[in-house]
Length: 234
Ligand code: UDP
Image (cartoon, rainbow, N blue to C red; front, side):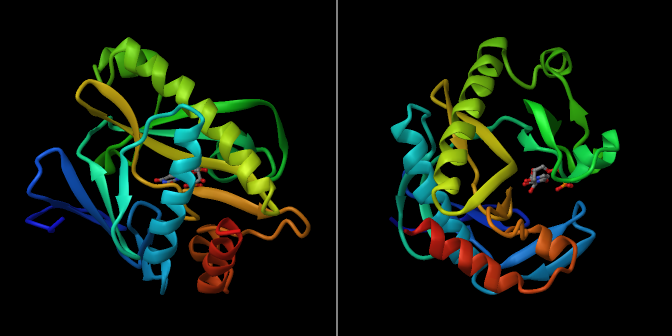
């Protein structure tokens, strides 16, 4: 499958057309950004880690009945995927308080939550990805009621799969962000699942094993991505 014209370049990935209008090729970069693009850098090897890790995890998720856009990995950095129209929502699941949740509600990072939290942000860089609720989503017609119900159901299943998968590898899943798309009327898990999009803490030491090392200048960024990569390949 050949890469044709590039149709999109995001912060961490490029997307190309192929000779099949129903298929795209995603190419993962080493570029890293944080705080809505205000902090920029590179994490050597990140593209390889995030591409391969996403595919390993997406296969596990498919096995548990959530359809994904994955077709096949083409190379270290490239994957063939179904062309989808992305639903402009960041679907966030939280198992433990951290990040913007801790800041917003004044609770310490690491505090367990009495209930798993599902929240949505409206994917819109100009607005700074604001928090949005189900009524807002329907009022703005960002998704239909049927799509929204599936997105919620799938997100909880993804959480179950990921929690178990990472725990077996010595990693606690604190929170994560996923995105969904629509292809031929079907809701599919799309985008990526990687240390860029999950908070993962070492079970033994509570050490942060994710993009917070880059966001917060904690050091050992490349080494941490490689260590997560080593564990997910086990
Ligand atoms: N996240 C992401 N992309 C975003 C915002 C958040 O992948 O644009 C992930 C982030 O890595 C974390 C989870 O979503 O695993 C929750 O992030 P939070 O809302 O706490 O925002 P942050 O503190 O990262 O700004």
